[in-house]
Length: 526
Image 1 (tube, rainbow, N blue to C red):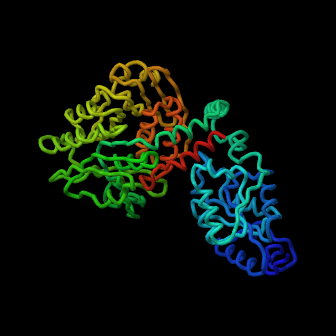
Image 2 (image 1 turned 90 degrees about the horizontal axis):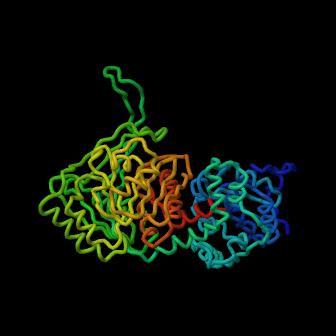
Image 3 (image 1 turned 180 degrees about the vertical axis):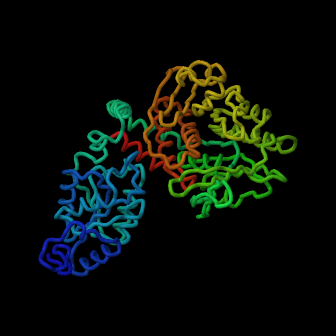
Protein backbone atom coordinates (compact mmCIF):
# COMPACT_ATOMS: atom_id res chain seq x y z
CA UNK A 1 0.00 0.00 0.00
CA UNK A 2 1.19 3.54 -0.75
CA UNK A 3 0.26 6.43 1.54
CA UNK A 4 0.62 9.52 -0.61
CA UNK A 5 1.02 12.08 2.17
CA UNK A 6 4.15 10.39 3.49
CA UNK A 7 6.82 12.83 2.28
CA UNK A 8 9.26 11.36 4.80
CA UNK A 9 10.55 9.15 1.99
CA UNK A 10 11.60 12.15 -0.06
CA UNK A 11 12.99 15.42 1.19
CA UNK A 12 10.02 17.79 1.07
CA UNK A 13 8.92 16.38 -2.29
CA UNK A 14 12.23 17.32 -3.92
CA UNK A 15 13.01 13.78 -5.03
CA UNK A 16 16.07 13.52 -2.80
CA UNK A 17 16.18 10.88 -0.03
CA UNK A 18 15.01 12.23 3.29
CA UNK A 19 17.74 12.71 5.89
CA UNK A 20 17.67 11.09 9.30
CA UNK A 21 17.13 14.44 11.01
CA UNK A 22 14.09 15.15 8.84
CA UNK A 23 12.43 12.01 10.16
CA UNK A 24 12.61 13.29 13.75
CA UNK A 25 9.25 14.85 14.59
CA UNK A 26 7.27 16.03 17.60
CA UNK A 27 4.85 13.53 19.13
CA UNK A 28 1.81 15.50 17.93
CA UNK A 29 3.13 15.51 14.36
CA UNK A 30 3.76 11.77 14.55
CA UNK A 31 0.20 11.32 15.83
CA UNK A 32 -1.05 13.25 12.78
CA UNK A 33 0.97 10.99 10.48
CA UNK A 34 -0.57 7.97 12.20
CA UNK A 35 -4.10 9.36 11.82
CA UNK A 36 -3.63 9.98 8.08
CA UNK A 37 -2.30 6.45 7.61
CA UNK A 38 -5.30 4.94 9.39
CA UNK A 39 -7.68 7.15 7.38
CA UNK A 40 -6.12 5.82 4.17
CA UNK A 41 -6.71 2.25 5.34
CA UNK A 42 -3.14 1.59 6.42
CA UNK A 43 -1.78 0.01 9.57
CA UNK A 44 0.36 1.98 12.02
CA UNK A 45 3.19 0.23 13.86
CA UNK A 46 4.82 1.67 16.96
CA UNK A 47 8.08 0.60 18.61
CA UNK A 48 9.29 2.25 21.81
CA UNK A 49 12.51 2.03 23.83
CA UNK A 50 15.78 3.64 24.87
CA UNK A 51 17.94 2.46 21.92
CA UNK A 52 21.07 3.66 23.70
CA UNK A 53 23.55 1.58 21.74
CA UNK A 54 22.06 0.65 18.38
CA UNK A 55 23.01 -2.92 17.44
CA UNK A 56 22.00 -5.58 14.92
CA UNK A 57 19.30 -6.92 17.21
CA UNK A 58 17.63 -3.50 17.13
CA UNK A 59 17.87 -3.37 13.33
CA UNK A 60 16.18 -6.75 12.91
CA UNK A 61 13.59 -5.87 15.54
CA UNK A 62 12.63 -2.70 13.66
CA UNK A 63 12.69 -4.40 10.26
CA UNK A 64 10.31 -7.03 11.63
CA UNK A 65 8.14 -4.26 13.04
CA UNK A 66 7.99 -2.46 9.68
CA UNK A 67 6.78 -5.65 8.03
CA UNK A 68 3.68 -5.57 10.27
CA UNK A 69 2.20 -2.42 8.71
CA UNK A 70 2.45 0.59 6.44
CA UNK A 71 3.98 3.18 8.77
CA UNK A 72 6.64 2.53 11.42
CA UNK A 73 6.99 5.12 14.16
CA UNK A 74 9.71 4.73 16.77
CA UNK A 75 9.60 6.69 20.02
CA UNK A 76 12.54 6.98 22.40
CA UNK A 77 12.55 7.48 26.16
CA UNK A 78 13.79 10.97 27.06
CA UNK A 79 17.13 11.11 28.87
CA UNK A 80 15.65 12.07 32.23
CA UNK A 81 13.47 8.94 32.34
CA UNK A 82 16.19 6.41 31.50
CA UNK A 83 16.64 4.11 34.52
CA UNK A 84 19.47 1.96 33.22
CA UNK A 85 22.12 2.68 35.84
CA UNK A 86 24.91 5.22 36.27
CA UNK A 87 26.22 6.94 33.16
CA UNK A 88 23.12 6.09 31.16
CA UNK A 89 22.09 6.89 28.61
CA UNK A 90 25.56 6.85 27.07
CA UNK A 91 24.20 8.75 24.07
CA UNK A 92 21.90 11.77 24.58
CA UNK A 93 18.41 11.73 23.13
CA UNK A 94 19.18 13.75 19.93
CA UNK A 95 21.95 11.29 19.02
CA UNK A 96 19.84 8.25 19.82
CA UNK A 97 16.96 9.62 17.75
CA UNK A 98 19.18 10.34 14.76
CA UNK A 99 20.74 6.85 14.87
CA UNK A 100 17.31 5.20 14.79
CA UNK A 101 16.03 7.61 12.12
CA UNK A 102 18.96 6.65 9.87
CA UNK A 103 17.40 3.20 9.38
CA UNK A 104 15.50 2.99 6.09
CA UNK A 105 12.71 0.90 7.63
CA UNK A 106 11.80 3.70 10.05
CA UNK A 107 9.34 6.37 8.89
CA UNK A 108 9.27 8.70 11.87
CA UNK A 109 11.06 9.13 15.20
CA UNK A 110 10.07 11.08 18.30
CA UNK A 111 11.25 11.70 21.86
CA UNK A 112 8.75 10.66 24.52
CA UNK A 113 8.44 12.98 27.50
CA UNK A 114 6.59 10.37 29.54
CA UNK A 115 8.28 7.91 31.89
CA UNK A 116 6.49 4.95 30.25
CA UNK A 117 5.18 4.06 26.79
CA UNK A 118 1.57 4.62 27.84
CA UNK A 119 1.57 8.35 27.10
CA UNK A 120 2.87 7.76 23.57
CA UNK A 121 0.37 4.96 23.00
CA UNK A 122 -2.52 7.30 23.79
CA UNK A 123 -1.25 9.80 21.21
CA UNK A 124 -0.19 7.46 18.39
CA UNK A 125 -2.92 4.79 18.88
CA UNK A 126 -1.02 2.19 16.83
CA UNK A 127 -2.61 -0.74 15.08
CA UNK A 128 0.39 -2.80 16.15
CA UNK A 129 2.65 -2.18 19.16
CA UNK A 130 5.90 -4.10 18.80
CA UNK A 131 8.15 -5.17 21.67
CA UNK A 132 11.14 -7.47 22.01
CA UNK A 133 10.92 -11.07 23.18
CA UNK A 134 12.31 -10.11 26.62
CA UNK A 135 8.90 -8.59 27.38
CA UNK A 136 6.73 -11.46 26.20
CA UNK A 137 6.07 -12.92 29.66
CA UNK A 138 3.80 -10.58 31.62
CA UNK A 139 4.35 -12.62 34.79
CA UNK A 140 8.05 -11.73 34.80
CA UNK A 141 7.46 -8.00 34.33
CA UNK A 142 8.37 -6.33 37.64
CA UNK A 143 6.70 -3.06 36.60
CA UNK A 144 3.29 -4.34 35.50
CA UNK A 145 3.75 -2.09 32.48
CA UNK A 146 3.37 -4.76 29.80
CA UNK A 147 -0.13 -5.65 30.99
CA UNK A 148 -1.16 -1.98 31.11
CA UNK A 149 0.28 -1.37 27.63
CA UNK A 150 -1.49 -4.41 26.19
CA UNK A 151 -4.82 -3.40 27.71
CA UNK A 152 -4.40 0.16 26.42
CA UNK A 153 -3.54 -0.95 22.87
CA UNK A 154 -6.44 -3.40 22.83
CA UNK A 155 -8.81 -0.68 24.08
CA UNK A 156 -8.55 1.12 20.73
CA UNK A 157 -8.55 -2.04 18.61
CA UNK A 158 -4.81 -2.62 18.30
CA UNK A 159 -2.65 -5.60 19.14
CA UNK A 160 0.74 -6.15 20.73
CA UNK A 161 3.32 -8.49 19.19
CA UNK A 162 6.78 -9.61 20.26
CA UNK A 163 9.70 -10.06 17.89
CA UNK A 164 12.33 -12.70 18.64
CA UNK A 165 15.35 -11.23 16.85
CA UNK A 166 17.05 -9.36 19.71
CA UNK A 167 19.64 -11.67 21.25
CA UNK A 168 21.52 -9.05 23.26
CA UNK A 169 20.73 -5.79 24.98
CA UNK A 170 22.26 -2.34 24.85
CA UNK A 171 22.88 -2.58 28.60
CA UNK A 172 24.91 -5.78 28.37
CA UNK A 173 26.90 -4.50 25.38
CA UNK A 174 27.61 -1.17 27.11
CA UNK A 175 28.57 -2.89 30.37
CA UNK A 176 30.92 -5.29 28.59
CA UNK A 177 32.48 -3.17 25.87
CA UNK A 178 32.33 0.51 26.86
CA UNK A 179 34.31 1.98 29.74
CA UNK A 180 31.31 3.14 31.75
CA UNK A 181 33.01 2.19 35.04
CA UNK A 182 36.56 2.15 36.31
CA UNK A 183 38.42 -1.17 36.47
CA UNK A 184 37.53 -1.86 40.12
CA UNK A 185 33.79 -1.52 39.54
CA UNK A 186 33.94 -3.45 36.25
CA UNK A 187 35.73 -6.36 37.92
CA UNK A 188 33.27 -6.35 40.81
CA UNK A 189 30.22 -6.35 38.52
CA UNK A 190 31.67 -9.09 36.32
CA UNK A 191 31.96 -11.27 39.41
CA UNK A 192 28.32 -10.63 40.27
CA UNK A 193 27.20 -11.47 36.73
CA UNK A 194 29.06 -14.77 36.86
CA UNK A 195 27.25 -15.62 40.09
CA UNK A 196 23.78 -14.74 38.67
CA UNK A 197 23.20 -12.11 41.36
CA UNK A 198 20.48 -10.22 39.43
CA UNK A 199 17.79 -12.78 40.29
CA UNK A 200 18.79 -12.69 43.97
CA UNK A 201 18.47 -8.90 43.99
CA UNK A 202 14.93 -9.03 42.59
CA UNK A 203 13.97 -11.78 45.07
CA UNK A 204 15.41 -9.79 47.97
CA UNK A 205 13.43 -6.67 47.09
CA UNK A 206 10.23 -8.63 46.49
CA UNK A 207 10.71 -10.47 49.79
CA UNK A 208 10.28 -7.41 52.01
CA UNK A 209 6.95 -6.20 50.66
CA UNK A 210 4.83 -7.53 53.54
CA UNK A 211 6.95 -5.97 56.30
CA UNK A 212 5.65 -3.18 58.53
CA UNK A 213 8.18 -0.42 59.25
CA UNK A 214 8.15 2.22 61.99
CA UNK A 215 10.32 5.28 61.40
CA UNK A 216 11.37 7.40 64.41
CA UNK A 217 13.22 10.70 64.22
CA UNK A 218 13.13 14.39 63.41
CA UNK A 219 11.34 15.81 60.40
CA UNK A 220 13.46 18.49 58.74
CA UNK A 221 12.21 21.05 56.26
CA UNK A 222 14.98 21.22 53.68
CA UNK A 223 14.70 24.63 52.04
CA UNK A 224 16.67 25.65 48.95
CA UNK A 225 16.98 29.38 48.24
CA UNK A 226 18.43 29.77 44.76
CA UNK A 227 20.66 32.84 44.44
CA UNK A 228 23.01 33.50 41.51
CA UNK A 229 26.20 35.35 42.54
CA UNK A 230 26.61 38.64 40.66
CA UNK A 231 29.90 39.91 42.07
CA UNK A 232 31.39 41.84 44.97
CA UNK A 233 29.23 44.51 46.55
CA UNK A 234 30.52 48.03 45.86
CA UNK A 235 30.23 49.03 49.52
CA UNK A 236 30.88 45.81 51.46
CA UNK A 237 33.27 42.88 51.36
CA UNK A 238 30.48 40.51 50.44
CA UNK A 239 29.21 38.78 47.31
CA UNK A 240 25.92 40.18 46.02
CA UNK A 241 23.53 37.58 44.62
CA UNK A 242 20.30 37.65 42.62
CA UNK A 243 17.34 35.72 44.03
CA UNK A 244 16.04 33.17 41.50
CA UNK A 245 13.62 30.96 43.38
CA UNK A 246 12.83 28.73 46.32
CA UNK A 247 11.95 25.12 46.98
CA UNK A 248 10.99 23.51 50.28
CA UNK A 249 10.88 19.77 50.92
CA UNK A 250 9.75 17.60 53.82
CA UNK A 251 13.02 15.89 54.63
CA UNK A 252 14.57 14.02 57.51
CA UNK A 253 12.47 11.10 58.72
CA UNK A 254 9.62 11.99 56.30
CA UNK A 255 11.88 11.64 53.25
CA UNK A 256 13.19 8.35 54.64
CA UNK A 257 9.64 7.09 55.13
CA UNK A 258 8.71 7.94 51.54
CA UNK A 259 11.73 6.02 50.25
CA UNK A 260 10.94 2.79 52.10
CA UNK A 261 7.19 3.11 51.45
CA UNK A 262 7.73 2.03 47.85
CA UNK A 263 9.16 -1.29 49.06
CA UNK A 264 6.88 -2.30 51.97
CA UNK A 265 3.14 -2.29 52.63
CA UNK A 266 2.97 -0.08 55.71
CA UNK A 267 5.11 2.70 57.17
CA UNK A 268 4.36 4.68 60.31
CA UNK A 269 6.33 7.71 61.50
CA UNK A 270 6.82 9.13 64.99
CA UNK A 271 8.20 12.67 64.84
CA UNK A 272 7.97 16.17 66.30
CA UNK A 273 6.84 19.42 64.70
CA UNK A 274 6.82 22.93 66.07
CA UNK A 275 3.60 24.82 66.63
CA UNK A 276 5.24 27.91 65.11
CA UNK A 277 6.07 27.62 61.40
CA UNK A 278 4.95 24.00 61.58
CA UNK A 279 4.97 23.27 57.82
CA UNK A 280 2.36 20.62 58.64
CA UNK A 281 0.52 21.08 55.34
CA UNK A 282 3.73 20.59 53.37
CA UNK A 283 4.55 17.47 55.37
CA UNK A 284 1.09 15.93 54.93
CA UNK A 285 1.05 16.81 51.22
CA UNK A 286 4.43 15.10 50.83
CA UNK A 287 3.83 11.75 52.52
CA UNK A 288 2.76 8.93 50.22
CA UNK A 289 -0.43 6.94 50.66
CA UNK A 290 0.88 4.10 52.83
CA UNK A 291 2.69 6.39 55.31
CA UNK A 292 0.90 7.29 58.55
CA UNK A 293 2.42 10.12 60.62
CA UNK A 294 2.11 10.58 64.39
CA UNK A 295 3.06 14.10 65.48
CA UNK A 296 4.22 15.36 68.85
CA UNK A 297 3.57 19.11 68.72
CA UNK A 298 6.09 21.37 70.43
CA UNK A 299 4.84 24.78 71.64
CA UNK A 300 6.86 27.92 71.16
CA UNK A 301 9.34 26.50 68.63
CA UNK A 302 9.41 26.05 64.83
CA UNK A 303 9.63 22.79 62.95
CA UNK A 304 13.30 22.21 62.20
CA UNK A 305 14.18 24.00 58.96
CA UNK A 306 17.56 24.01 57.24
CA UNK A 307 17.77 26.75 54.65
CA UNK A 308 20.52 26.29 52.07
CA UNK A 309 21.47 29.13 49.76
CA UNK A 310 22.39 27.59 46.43
CA UNK A 311 24.07 28.82 43.26
CA UNK A 312 21.64 27.36 40.69
CA UNK A 313 24.20 27.33 37.90
CA UNK A 314 26.09 24.36 39.31
CA UNK A 315 23.87 23.42 42.29
CA UNK A 316 26.72 24.63 44.52
CA UNK A 317 25.66 25.33 48.11
CA UNK A 318 26.95 28.69 49.35
CA UNK A 319 25.94 28.59 53.01
CA UNK A 320 23.24 27.24 55.31
CA UNK A 321 21.01 28.64 58.07
CA UNK A 322 19.35 26.45 60.72
CA UNK A 323 15.96 27.49 62.14
CA UNK A 324 15.44 25.28 65.21
CA UNK A 325 15.56 24.79 68.95
CA UNK A 326 17.66 21.74 69.72
CA UNK A 327 17.16 21.76 73.47
CA UNK A 328 16.55 18.10 74.46
CA UNK A 329 12.91 17.24 75.08
CA UNK A 330 11.84 17.01 78.71
CA UNK A 331 8.69 16.77 80.75
CA UNK A 332 5.34 16.20 79.08
CA UNK A 333 6.62 16.27 75.48
CA UNK A 334 9.33 13.74 76.24
CA UNK A 335 6.61 11.60 77.85
CA UNK A 336 4.52 11.83 74.67
CA UNK A 337 7.38 10.59 72.50
CA UNK A 338 8.14 7.75 74.91
CA UNK A 339 4.45 6.77 75.07
CA UNK A 340 4.12 6.64 71.28
CA UNK A 341 7.21 4.44 71.05
CA UNK A 342 5.98 2.16 73.86
CA UNK A 343 2.53 1.84 72.26
CA UNK A 344 3.63 1.19 68.69
CA UNK A 345 7.16 -0.17 68.33
CA UNK A 346 6.34 -3.79 69.18
CA UNK A 347 3.66 -3.91 66.45
CA UNK A 348 6.21 -3.39 63.67
CA UNK A 349 8.66 -5.79 62.07
CA UNK A 350 11.35 -3.12 61.75
CA UNK A 351 12.02 0.08 63.68
CA UNK A 352 14.29 2.53 61.84
CA UNK A 353 15.76 5.45 63.78
CA UNK A 354 16.84 8.61 61.95
CA UNK A 355 18.54 10.40 64.85
CA UNK A 356 19.69 13.82 63.64
CA UNK A 357 20.74 14.90 67.12
CA UNK A 358 18.38 17.87 67.33
CA UNK A 359 16.85 17.09 70.71
CA UNK A 360 13.95 14.75 69.99
CA UNK A 361 15.58 11.49 71.04
CA UNK A 362 16.66 11.54 74.68
CA UNK A 363 18.12 8.80 76.86
CA UNK A 364 14.61 7.81 77.97
CA UNK A 365 13.23 7.55 74.45
CA UNK A 366 16.31 5.70 73.22
CA UNK A 367 15.90 3.17 76.04
CA UNK A 368 12.26 2.69 75.03
CA UNK A 369 13.26 2.14 71.40
CA UNK A 370 15.88 -0.47 72.33
CA UNK A 371 13.55 -2.24 74.76
CA UNK A 372 10.44 -2.30 72.53
CA UNK A 373 11.81 -2.99 69.04
CA UNK A 374 11.73 -6.43 67.48
CA UNK A 375 14.41 -5.35 65.01
CA UNK A 376 16.21 -2.03 65.40
CA UNK A 377 18.11 -0.19 62.65
CA UNK A 378 19.95 2.98 63.64
CA UNK A 379 21.67 5.98 62.16
CA UNK A 380 22.95 8.64 64.55
CA UNK A 381 23.93 11.53 62.32
CA UNK A 382 26.76 13.97 62.87
CA UNK A 383 26.09 17.43 61.46
CA UNK A 384 27.09 21.03 61.99
CA UNK A 385 24.76 21.43 64.98
CA UNK A 386 25.84 18.37 66.95
CA UNK A 387 29.36 17.53 65.74
CA UNK A 388 30.84 15.04 68.19
CA UNK A 389 27.80 15.00 70.48
CA UNK A 390 25.51 12.58 68.64
CA UNK A 391 27.50 9.42 68.03
CA UNK A 392 26.09 5.95 67.46
CA UNK A 393 27.19 4.66 70.88
CA UNK A 394 24.19 6.63 72.18
CA UNK A 395 22.49 3.31 71.33
CA UNK A 396 23.89 0.50 73.47
CA UNK A 397 22.31 -2.14 71.26
CA UNK A 398 20.94 -2.44 67.74
CA UNK A 399 20.34 -5.12 65.12
CA UNK A 400 21.70 -3.01 62.27
CA UNK A 401 23.79 0.17 62.26
CA UNK A 402 24.31 2.26 59.13
CA UNK A 403 26.52 5.34 59.43
CA UNK A 404 29.03 7.14 57.23
CA UNK A 405 32.80 7.09 57.58
CA UNK A 406 33.15 10.42 59.47
CA UNK A 407 30.44 9.29 61.91
CA UNK A 408 32.27 6.01 62.47
CA UNK A 409 35.55 7.85 63.11
CA UNK A 410 33.90 10.23 65.58
CA UNK A 411 32.30 7.35 67.47
CA UNK A 412 35.60 5.50 68.01
CA UNK A 413 37.77 8.66 68.17
CA UNK A 414 40.07 7.51 65.37
CA UNK A 415 40.88 9.83 62.44
CA UNK A 416 43.37 7.72 60.54
CA UNK A 417 42.82 3.95 60.70
CA UNK A 418 41.38 2.09 57.73
CA UNK A 419 37.58 2.02 57.81
CA UNK A 420 37.55 -1.77 57.45
CA UNK A 421 39.68 -2.09 60.59
CA UNK A 422 37.38 0.26 62.50
CA UNK A 423 34.24 -1.64 61.50
CA UNK A 424 35.38 -5.05 62.65
CA UNK A 425 37.38 -3.72 65.61
CA UNK A 426 36.58 -0.73 67.82
CA UNK A 427 33.17 0.07 66.29
CA UNK A 428 32.01 -3.51 66.79
CA UNK A 429 33.18 -3.30 70.42
CA UNK A 430 31.47 0.05 71.00
CA UNK A 431 27.91 -1.08 70.29
CA UNK A 432 26.22 -4.46 70.62
CA UNK A 433 25.39 -4.96 66.95
CA UNK A 434 26.13 -7.89 64.64
CA UNK A 435 25.48 -6.13 61.31
CA UNK A 436 27.07 -2.83 60.35
CA UNK A 437 27.47 -0.84 57.15
CA UNK A 438 29.71 2.20 56.89
CA UNK A 439 29.08 4.27 53.77
CA UNK A 440 32.12 5.97 52.29
CA UNK A 441 31.02 8.29 49.48
CA UNK A 442 32.86 7.65 46.23
CA UNK A 443 34.62 4.71 47.89
CA UNK A 444 31.37 2.77 48.20
CA UNK A 445 30.61 1.03 51.48
CA UNK A 446 32.06 -1.47 53.92
CA UNK A 447 29.73 -4.21 55.19
CA UNK A 448 30.15 -6.33 58.30
CA UNK A 449 28.25 -9.32 59.60
CA UNK A 450 29.34 -11.25 62.65
CA UNK A 451 28.94 -14.49 60.66
CA UNK A 452 29.77 -13.37 57.10
CA UNK A 453 32.69 -11.17 58.06
CA UNK A 454 33.80 -8.09 56.14
CA UNK A 455 32.77 -7.04 52.63
CA UNK A 456 33.37 -4.09 50.33
CA UNK A 457 31.04 -2.76 47.64
CA UNK A 458 32.25 -0.02 45.25
CA UNK A 459 30.24 3.08 44.42
CA UNK A 460 28.38 3.04 41.10
CA UNK A 461 28.32 6.72 40.23
CA UNK A 462 30.65 9.70 40.17
CA UNK A 463 27.91 12.07 39.00
CA UNK A 464 26.66 13.87 42.09
CA UNK A 465 23.93 16.51 41.91
CA UNK A 466 23.01 16.71 45.61
CA UNK A 467 24.09 14.52 48.55
CA UNK A 468 21.30 15.63 50.92
CA UNK A 469 19.45 12.59 52.26
CA UNK A 470 21.51 9.95 50.44
CA UNK A 471 22.57 8.18 53.64
CA UNK A 472 19.02 8.28 54.98
CA UNK A 473 17.71 6.68 51.78
CA UNK A 474 20.39 3.99 52.05
CA UNK A 475 19.38 3.19 55.65
CA UNK A 476 15.61 3.19 55.13
CA UNK A 477 15.63 0.85 52.11
CA UNK A 478 18.30 -1.53 53.42
CA UNK A 479 16.92 -1.96 56.98
CA UNK A 480 14.05 -4.28 55.90
CA UNK A 481 16.51 -6.25 53.76
CA UNK A 482 18.79 -6.85 56.75
CA UNK A 483 15.79 -7.84 58.88
CA UNK A 484 14.73 -10.41 56.27
CA UNK A 485 18.16 -12.06 56.29
CA UNK A 486 19.57 -10.83 52.98
CA UNK A 487 23.39 -11.28 52.97
CA UNK A 488 25.13 -8.06 53.94
CA UNK A 489 27.20 -7.72 50.77
CA UNK A 490 24.00 -7.96 48.73
CA UNK A 491 22.47 -5.36 51.06
CA UNK A 492 25.49 -3.13 50.37
CA UNK A 493 25.04 -3.57 46.62
CA UNK A 494 21.38 -2.54 46.79
CA UNK A 495 22.18 0.29 49.18
CA UNK A 496 24.86 1.71 46.90
CA UNK A 497 22.39 1.63 44.01
CA UNK A 498 19.89 3.53 46.18
CA UNK A 499 22.60 6.06 47.01
CA UNK A 500 23.58 6.41 43.35
CA UNK A 501 19.99 7.20 42.43
CA UNK A 502 19.46 9.58 45.35
CA UNK A 503 22.53 11.76 44.66
CA UNK A 504 21.06 12.45 41.21
CA UNK A 505 17.97 14.08 42.76
CA UNK A 506 17.85 17.70 43.94
CA UNK A 507 16.68 17.74 47.55
CA UNK A 508 13.62 15.52 47.87
CA UNK A 509 11.94 16.32 44.56
CA UNK A 510 11.24 12.62 44.27
CA UNK A 511 11.82 9.45 46.25
CA UNK A 512 13.77 6.35 45.31
CA UNK A 513 11.14 3.98 43.94
CA UNK A 514 11.07 0.19 43.81
CA UNK A 515 10.58 -0.30 40.07
CA UNK A 516 13.24 2.22 38.92
CA UNK A 517 15.66 0.71 41.46
CA UNK A 518 15.03 -2.78 40.11
CA UNK A 519 15.56 -1.53 36.56
CA UNK A 520 18.76 0.24 37.65
CA UNK A 521 20.12 -2.93 39.27
CA UNK A 522 19.10 -5.36 36.53
CA UNK A 523 20.67 -3.09 33.89
CA UNK A 524 23.81 -2.81 36.03
CA UNK A 525 24.09 -6.59 36.26
CA UNK A 526 23.45 -7.46 32.59
